[in-house]
Image (cartoon, rainbow, N blue to C red; front, side):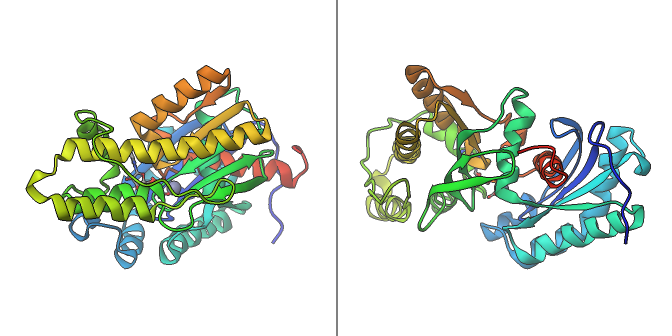
Length: 328
Ligand code: KG4
Ligand code: ZN
């Protein structure tokens, strides 16, 4: 089918993100201006299982995506005909959840005769930085830290990222969630860690730091050591001190590899994104490290650090410009 030819300015992109447990829809203008963004979180549905149940997540996306889309239009004051392009997260993620978003987006695009842009979720997390930092342009070095991923990437240009290092086992957010779950905190535990850890002594317990090749991570040793401390110390365990020491060991490890990569590759522009980039200690420690070295430091606003569709709409804009050869 021949699609409508498009302009490259005043481009309103309707974006969908359903890769995990958030049903998110947004309308983004020209890659950087969010006209409307809605996120329906399924946390309450998954809380009793202590984590995301894929089958339940997909069904919940199905039940909610229409309403979330309607709400996104209502709060934008835009009409269906104001949309010029449709975007959707295509990978990575829970397959059945991704398919809900992809099918819905395809249906919308077909019905309006619009082009559909598939977007990689991790590139989307990088693009969250463009929304919150209007002057940020590639190249820069970015740490993507979420519940499913921990990667140090070179953002070479708007559409190409190169993975320099990544976790070989658990992701950083995943071990925050597993440790806090063991302590009886609600899923996702990472979101509660700052408030408890802020009241603890951060060098009270010691943790291993695996040294791998280049900039790779391994978090399973830190996780197992923490779970063993909880099992062995029982009533002697001081939870505030444990979480403070655990949080610091993870944050220091992330920053150690990131600054090493920046030094080796001569990057002076550093960024963080993904759900774990909401972590207070990570945000503040990295800011100090960058100041010390005179490096520029970029982070997403808290509302765009976790999963959202605005970041997908932003990345789709650059993917589209690249397709029609307007960016390098
Ligand atoms: O990016 P995201 O929303 O979803 C994925 O793509 O995985 O990240 C979710 C992860 C969860 O593991 C959650 O515990 C973690 O981000 N998280 C945090 C904080 N807020 C969310 N981890 C540490 N500190 C936080 N403040
Ligand atoms: Zn994510």
